[in-house]
View 1: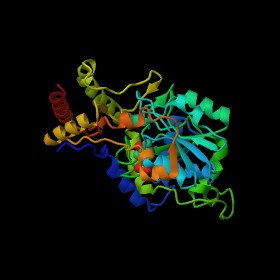
View 2: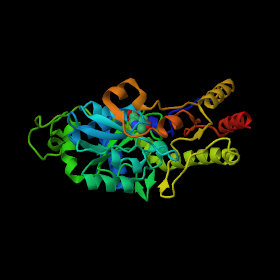
View 3: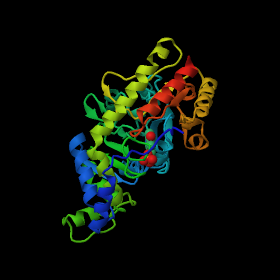
View 4: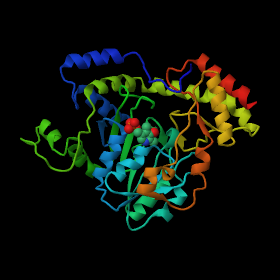
Length: 376
Ligand SMILES: *Cc1c(COP(=O)(O)O)cnc(C)c1O
């Protein structure tokens, strides 16, 4: 069976896990956490990076950090993972779903402004497949209306927009190190990127259960107390040790994924030229990280037949997302603004192919051959 995904393993994880165990300190903010955070701060040019248990936790931190209150409105795409919306609904926000662009599957920046009301507080662009949203336009709209921008860069680690790392363009960025993403912290993990200097101190407090314990550990205060709302948003240093192995190999992992992505693209290009399928679009200003390779079939029935065909060949290909505005909770906590031109239609015909760091080229060849025999 060729799986859809396997967690990335580069080989040095065991050594770093061993050394974390021997260090005698496994809780959050240990030596590996500091190493990972500093590496990302330098590499991506971020004010402050804080490792968290998940991208979901980072999004929840972001909602606390920008003080989302009941009745506030937050603009999100409907075509995204639940956490993008859930984090704000948890604070009582009403979600305003905006349509996507069919070329990148990202929120359509031209449809955002019409969805803004006096209650709007934030825009949450999701960089689907590690391909950037049109951030210049989104930041311009946000500045004009004094809104926060929280980038859901769960899929965008190591991608750039006009040379800037995804997650570093809005006020706050959120990374995922889940095992289905490009880099993992041993299965689960995330990071909050704080780009707005004024948010850094409070971000540390919210992450430390609402206390100023981080300042205490740095010797800046002589005792720590409860200061604010917060939760336990720290990653175990054991997980950070796993992540450190992956970050050290970040360029190798990225190159390998890009090679696999390009191999799919080149092999399937003739089928796009014949009009049989559609392939992903990469805007010129975006450098992507090959987080995902997807194709678009004619319709849902075509997709179902292909999934069954691949399954017959022992290949797992999957689709996502059921648009949030058509889900029970999405209907309860939000509404779709304007017309759903693309969200539902495009989501029904998109299929993701196996793409992961340890995917053997011979297995990728099997996937391609099976696809071509169906599509031809
Ligand atoms: C994976 C993902 C998340 C959630 O990440 P976790 O680390 O699993 O919490 C959020 N948003 C998007 C767009 C994702 O792809």
